[in-house]
Image (cartoon, rainbow, N blue to C red; front, side):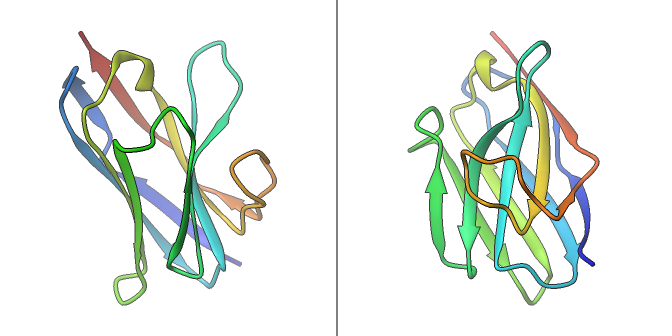
Length: 117
C-alpha cells in the first residue's frame, strides 16, 4: 500500500513560487496533485505517469511543473507565477485515474497554499 506525506506549502504573494513535495512508500504508475479551495470541489492539477508522461489542468499550464524522483521516492510540484485563485489545500495522490477523476488508491493529508495579492 502506498503511503504519502506532503510538504512545502505556505503563504506567498501573487507572482511568487512554491515547490510542493510528496514522499511516497510503495509503487504507483500514475501519481498526481489535486487541490481543493474552500467551498469548491477537489480538482486535478497535474499528473505524471510512469515518471515521464505529464498532464496539466488548463488553469496551470505553463506555470506548474510536475516531476518525480524515484531515487528519492518524491513527487514534486513546482508552482511559479502563483495567483490568488491558486489558493487551496493541495493533495498528493497515488494510482490516480487522471485529472478529471477523483479515484485514487491513496491520498496524502494535504498541504495549504495561500496566495495573496
